[in-house]
Image (tube, rainbow, N blue to C red; front, top):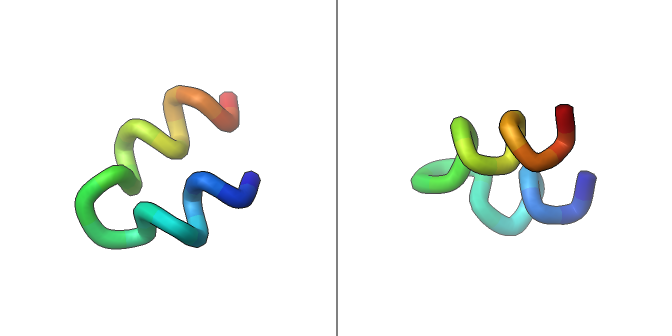
Length: 20
């Protein structure tokens, strides 16, 4: 869930895909 914080702007979709 750290990725979402780091890429909360450009990787929001990516973070969600990875977090899911």
